[in-house]
Structure formats: structure tokens, C-alpha cells
Length: 125
Image (cartoon, rainbow, N blue to C red):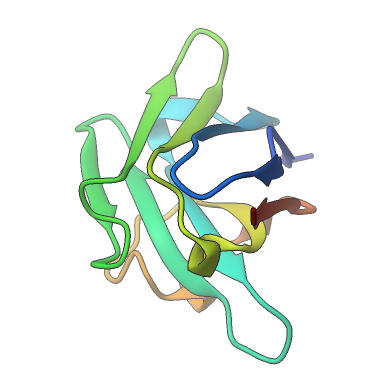
């Protein structure tokens, strides 16, 4: 059974940093595309960042480029999202997602097979 478990969310002041973690189990980690999405009430999930299988290709939404970094630890089967210079508009529930077939559009939530339960990130003074 594939499982994705997020951690690391919380409350942070504008300009601060958080590191989210997505611990994966039940599949061959390096064969997957792992992504982070975020969602606020009443809106669709937004693709934030994606790390594609063994070649290490990455995707970032324009709104987070230069502030967020995605990276993986194959030994720990964990993908991290380092979020720096956080802004109030980054406030959302952040979800980890995985796909076994590869993705053509990393920002398309419908291409992903597996999802974590989400972790809340709140950026506020």
C-alpha cells in the first residue's frame, strides 16, 4: 500500500521559513514523480513544485520560484520542500502527491495517483 505522510507545517511570520517533509512508503521511491500542491478553501489545488524520478528534474510555480526548493533523500524515501521568505499568500494546506507513470504536466493534480493527508501552513504576523 502506497502511503504519503506530510509533516512540518505550522505558523510562521512573513519572511520566515518552513521545511515540509513527505515520507513515502509502499513503492520504489526513485521511479516516481513527487509533487507538492497547496489549496485554500474554495479554490482548486495549485501545483507548487515537483521532483521527477531519478533524473532530478524540478518544476516550480512562478509564484514560488526563487523562494522554495524541492529536494529528495532516497535513503529516507522523503521529499522536502524548503520554503523561504514566506508570504501571507502562501497560507494554505499543503499536500504531497506521487505518480508512478511520470507526469506530462507537473502542475496538473489529476495526473497524480497518490496523495497525503495535508499539512497546514499559515503565514501571519
